[in-house]
Length: 354
Image 1 (cartoon, helix red, strand yellow):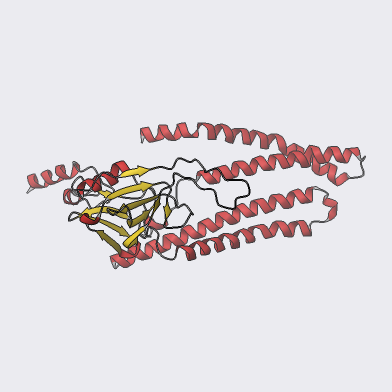
Image 2 (tube, rainbow, N blue to C red; image 1 turned 90 degrees about the horizontal axis):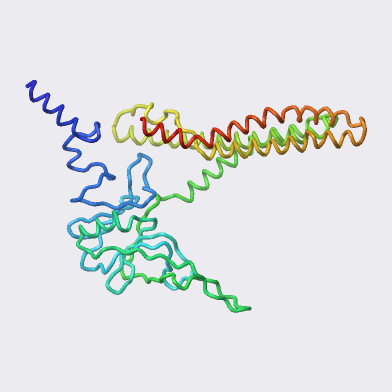
């Protein structure tokens, strides 16, 4: 028994991922693992549901081309009806002159569309392996030339690329659902959350401008603008935090429902360790804008106040205070710039030593 246990441990140690057993690895439970016997193709964005499961993919089953989409959609295209598989970065559908972008098209013998799957696909990698498994011709990628037809003077026709191919729908045309239902409503809800959070953050700045007395001078406007910008940034951050928490709660509820027991909350509500580069860029831009504003309200307002004598004492004092803030803020901006410049090198080194 001890020898059998040691052999089982040694066999499991050879599996590339420790959380998989040998049987799971052979059965290819992970969609993203390359399996030569059962190849699969996915859009470059890997559309997933709330539980992190990939719902959009293309595969070969029993010699037919099968596509899976959101909402349990399954589309099987018989092998005999397929003429070719193409991916395009731009194309036209039917009689419309409006170009559509990035799609995989399954065409019949007459070059009409049987199946349309939007998104960017790996034509000569994943899709090629799926076509080979289904015994179909190799897929091809069609890229537009980017050239635009010459428009005569006075013409009201829209400009379009003559190299953009046009396809018609075949009988039985189907479109793969690459996005979950209710995407428009979710987008509106997200926009509403951000607008409310942004409004709550901006209100204190507007109130500050109205409540400060006039003897504060021109610095009153500067303080109000700073509070508005900081409040707006804080509101956007709060909106993002609310959306992340709500999404994590939905994922936790879904996992708990599937498991018929409460899921470990730490796996869903743990703090995200990485800081988004977009926030760092926004902070750098905000600090640079603040530095420019202090230059205008510091030396600028101070010089203007001196030009009028010492009648505008408040402006002179506020200008001097803003000028005193400029050196430490400039040094901090320089520090952030140097750190940002060398940050990619540090991340690369950490990845190598991890």
